[in-house]
Length: 250
Image (cartoon, rainbow, N blue to C red; front, side, top):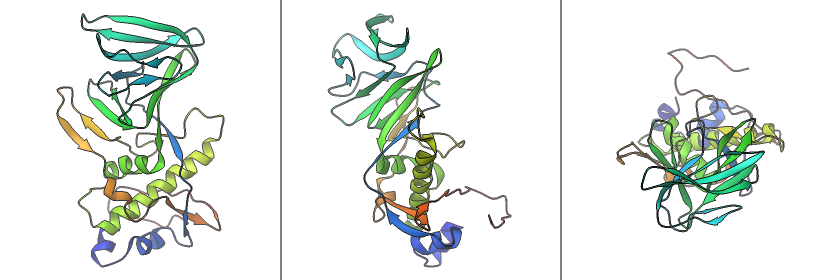
């Protein structure tokens, strides 16, 4: 539907006005969104392939002797381990707090996923304790999040107005998810269709072949723009397909 509107010459603003009647455009301040990475391994695992890789509560990670690092539950907090060239995990430090984040000088961290593939995520990737286990969380700037979400929901080859409309809808959905989550939540939004799809910066298969990237062009001309209804955040639900039928959301 958004593509058809764009091909008929509608702007992103006009497309959004059709699907979200009564809303207005507003601009968010620069912000961070916390994304639960459901596709990550049970123990938050990252590759040792980024310059200046560091861990909060630990410092700069060793630059030799390890190809991966992971966070594992330890007491009420976490421990960090390194994977050696001999194929063994070695504990580097215990007694870390219940939340710890990897970051790097490149501005991204590459996370190992449950199927052996890897994804580079902008910002920080870390773990937070959850019961006896942990959750893997990506703390990323909202604009970078949107760039990683839009191409997982629509094709980057669509007309620019359609892609930009999707960017604003995705940003709005993430914004209200963050508002609804509140301060006590461990994350704001997830990376699957239970929330909205998010694929990070670059995704590689287990052999290192690049499978997809984010779409920085998606936020061009609409940076930090969201929908508001009477000045309030909007639950900007949308569908990738409707099976040939649709109905007014009311």
